[in-house]
Length: 254
Image 1 (spheres, one colour):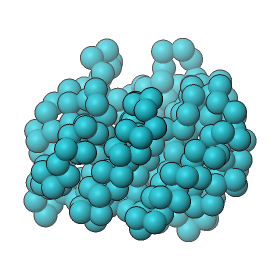
Image 2: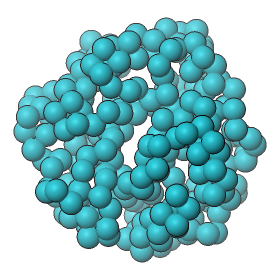
Image 3: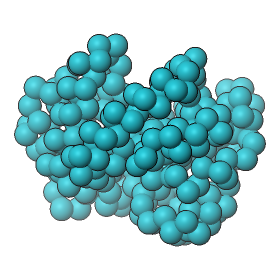
Image 4: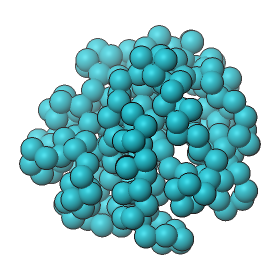
């Protein structure tokens, strides 16, 4: 397993300073958050010039692009597909094999979501890449059984496990062991069960990092464990120090 850092940890910085800070913290692999509303990579800019964006994600041999996590907010299906296609081109140009997207909202019938994801997964696989959906509150994957059913219905679809949503969301710390065989990526931060405790200091929450890593190891998982704190103004701690602490903790467990 490899420990990476998401650019969302430093979302309030411009991309280049964020990448320099990630490198200074000792990371060698980085996941890029893609959002039209963020300060870093934007889907519309990737569509406009893939080659230019490929240059932006490379800051030297010390830091390697390892994954992309894309929030594609457009309701237009044609535009959505164009954005995903451009991100696939960016992934190929930067030797990245995995793209994470969110599942549809939790009111979406699972038959409809499975059909949508089957189409997208087939396309992404045809590009030689892996498509993964995040386990997230407010989406179809907010309940583990539904996330598992999607993977069973959609050959090749993976999960980006974000256990915080199962600890702090409606699942309230229940088991999600059934998902481990389908995990292709992981987003990690510490989290408590109480309202307002989605993100807490490392060691003050309920995330069982050792148990997660042990379960992934039994499934021969050899991919990324990504430090994915949310860089928000109301965070009750210094982002840089918490990112460093979680990095050291994960590295001690792998």
